Length: 92
Image (cartoon, rainbow, N blue to C red; front, side, top):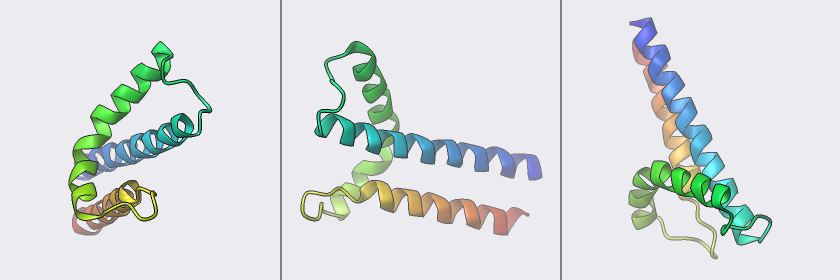
C-alpha cells in the first residue's frame, strides 16, 4: 500500500509543478517577457493549459478574479496539498 501512496504523492507533486509552471508562463506572456507566437513557447503553453485548465475552470467559476488577479492556481495548489496530506494520514 505504501507504493501506491508514494505513486499518488508523486503524481500530485508533479501536477502542482505543472500548475505553477502554467501560472508563471501566463505571467511571462502577459508582461511580454516571452513571445507566445514562438512555436516552442506556444506548444509549451498549450500543453500546460490542456493539463491545468480542467482543474482550474471549476475554481474560476466559483472564485472570481480579484482586481484582475486570478487566484485559482493558489486555491488548487492548497487543495492538492490538503489531498496529499490526507493521503499520507490515511494510508501511512
